[in-house]
Length: 449
Ligand code: NDP
Image (cartoon, rainbow, N blue to C red):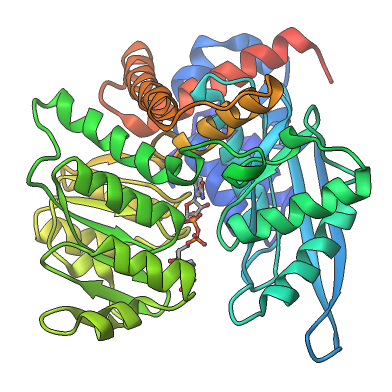
């Protein structure tokens, strides 16, 4: 970690002491604090209001038992979480993650990041995150349904369109959101569309929400390039992951004239020099719930599947980490720099380790953080909430244009903030400072609550 402003050292030490065994949460706090020196100097009122201390303490943390019955009649048990981090700007808003690695540290890091990301969108949404250590992989649809119903039976007490509005994340896609919404509707006897976002188009969802995080990521990169008088046309890109964010990043990159030559999952990565065939990838991942290895097997020829190793060894001009936290470290950064990467933009949440970020920046790579780059997903969730509230539904083109506008706005605001605070061109500091100051100013206005 780089040196923190003296006023933040004791706050950070207290975060470590009060949140033991939570490395991801501590890492997320450290990364934000590293940007805050100019903020502390410019805003003594934040210290008087103990704003930073309050920002790192979630408003509410809910941990609960999720029992469910498998297809063989056996009783299974998982642990569920919802961390309602900060509701200063609006109802808590943030996704649910179902993955065996989920624990309190991961949900708190995601909720903390979400608070500032949501502020950056300019929409009236607070920050929260939730999930469970349940693994949907290898489970039947009926098992996933029973798990979702049990999870929602407890979660329903804590959410609502004016309170807390969850959405999807890793392991929670259209199928899971359907089961979750169905159980909420049954328990409450209310058709409260605005309680969840990422819903299906036929039952209250918004067009473009499914695509939004991946599309938004590429719109952001497009803005980064435009600032340097370039476009995506002809650029060679690699995208880690092959889930929701990765697939729609690939789609938009191809639409804008780039070629995505590699993608991955937790079993390895594929290289397809002709450009990833998105139709086949989606068929395998979404409909067959298969692996990228199946993609290589089906394509044959020159398409390679590499087990283990790191996707960052594939030469590219632009790398988009779109899988999971801490997937790109110093070794990955070194490989990217060696083969001439120019831009790394995070589609996932905190995919680059602090050492990875430092190495990329030292290597002259333009680096943009997830809380700005992937904010298009939650921004479109807020558009879904607007449509639900007005019982309206917008066209694909109109909604996509709104998303593109929002991403341009975030990009410009991040750079303007970086300028104002004396750290020009620093996307990390600009995003952290813009997000934090917006929440902090509103917290001061609302008093000590
Ligand atoms: P999905 O579940 O759809 O896809 C996740 C992808 O990442 C899969 O390809 C998965 O591979 C891979 N992956 C997960 N864990 C690991 C791991 N430990 N090592 C290697 N690969 C891994 O999730 P999303 O696409 O929705 O989310 C991806 C990232 O984007 C997350 O960080 C999420 O928080 C973030 N994000 C998502 C948003 C959204 O709207 N969905 C919004 C903003 C951020 P495998 O199938 O093998 O597990």
